Image 1 (spheres, rainbow, N blue to C red):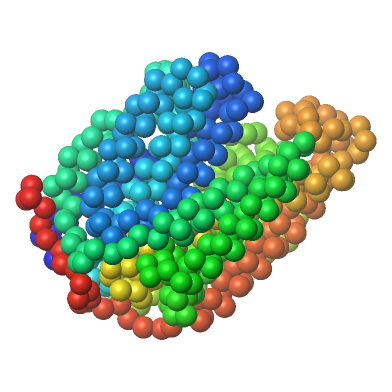
Image 2 (tube, rainbow, N blue to C red; image 1 turned 90 degrees about the vertical axis):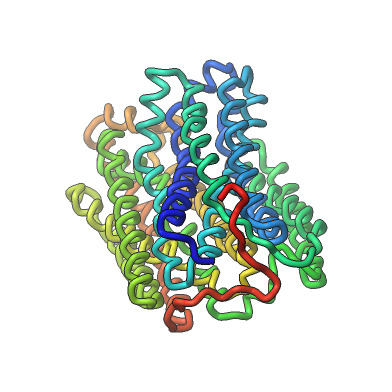
Length: 498
């Protein structure tokens, strides 16, 4: 559908606002988490505020994507925004940790709907040639949220109180909801289609069990629970694939992966989750221990990484829309990121901090070069009435790659440090403050241990991106079309408000 320039700008402003609020909730809460848990008297349950949010959103990705194809993305989007605002209100009024976690689960579910439908709506109202530019604008919400979220969360908690970390969503979200009610078009999806209830249930059970297993495996005393969770996940996934092979309307159409564009694009999306999102959380610890920096200074490297990601995401989106070419950016991006991570593996401990900052900025540039672009390319490879489904699948593999990669890297770091620490230091109570207050010889020894432990981590991530180079080369070359490709079974109409 062709929208007027003003209508399209209003639409993008609305989608960007709610996408940013959804992304911000991943980062803004982290700074206030200790305060929230302390005031609610449930420090031991603190992690569930984050896990509940992430798990709920990840599990519902394919379900929400399919619903967008069946009932139209407008209804799913507006409902998701409304639920997100109600859940944000409930989070601030929570009287105990149970109430907060329940509200956070609702927030996570609705945030996933906002993210997916924002990308799906952009695909419906733009041509394939226009899509990368607008997709990169919506995709900028995530790196911006990473940059401003922790600082904003700290300021709000200190001056307004932690409930406002959630209530800050309300004025902006309400404005975006009103704007979206006018700007987001109706999408008629044609004849009624059957929803894959069996696939939805088995996939949700399997994914929840898998994430719980990954979460529990690293905690002492939770090994049996993790094993049970992995067993349930295995059975659930087996049942899911059996159902999807026979379903008339599968929530994850496995046949799409026979298309090289889809297969390569989804693989590249997974590599972003595994290759960069998984390690970002550990970079501050690495620099505090190996480079003996303060907590504040250690945050400069992740900031440089995310800033590079933001710049490249917007730049390649604009270039791809201008030229119609996309394959070269994926090859360039994976090559640059792989090379940067290899350099990180080879850097000796004690190198001036500006060196790893530049290297990780380059890794961010490489990742941002195809972060949003692959979603736009994959969307163009399937029928328009499957846009929500393929968008959900692409986002799902990225999120799962990040979740599993984070758990594996955390386990490798924990085990490696514990195995090499001298007997005088306890790995379970080792903190940067403790190390920085120790004798210079101890500091040097710990720095070398962290340097040695992170070498195989950076090397493995470089190999991951090297696999991405292969996927990028296998991505079929082509030029994005200037013409929309409407499905024979759907039409796009103006909303009644217009």
